Picture: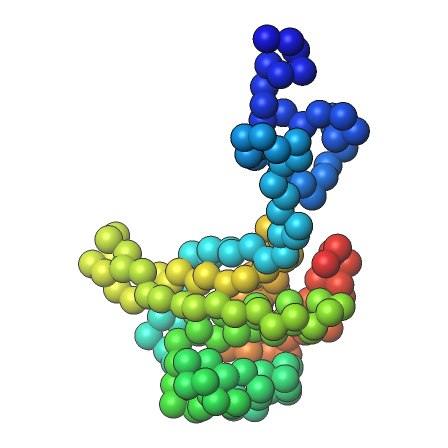
Length: 187
C-alpha cells in the first residue's frame, strides 16, 4: 500500500493542515473521492447537576414578590411556554409554585436567547435526581439544555444560579452583567 492509501479515513490534499475545520473526516464511502461532511454543528446539549441545599423545600410561592422580581430582572420570561405549550406557561408554573432548579433552567435559556446575536430559541428540561447520601431527598436536580458551546453553557449556568440566588435572598440580580459576559463569546 502506498502512503496515500495507508489510512482511508485521513484527509488528503488541502485538508491536511492542522488548522481547525468544520468538516468531519469520519469515513469515505467506497468508490467516492470526498468524505461525508457535517455542514454545521450548531447546538450542543449541556448537563448541569444542581444542589438546591436549603432551598430544596422552598418553591417560588414561598419567596415574597419572587415572580415580580424575576420578571423585573428578565421581562421576556413572560413569553416562555414551558410544558403547557402556551405563551406564559412558565410564569403560570411560577405562580403555582415551582422549584428553583426549574427557574434556573429558564433563566439559563433566556440569558442565552438574549445574548445570542441571532436570538435563537433554546430549550431544556429539569428533573429531580435522588441523592443517595440524603435518603433520596429532592434537593438534587439534573438540568439539560441546549447551548452553543461548553463555555457559553458553563457561563450561562453560573450566571443563572447567581441571579436566582440573589432573587431568593431578595437582592437585585446582575442581569446586565450576565448578558455582557455572555455577549463576549463567539456565537
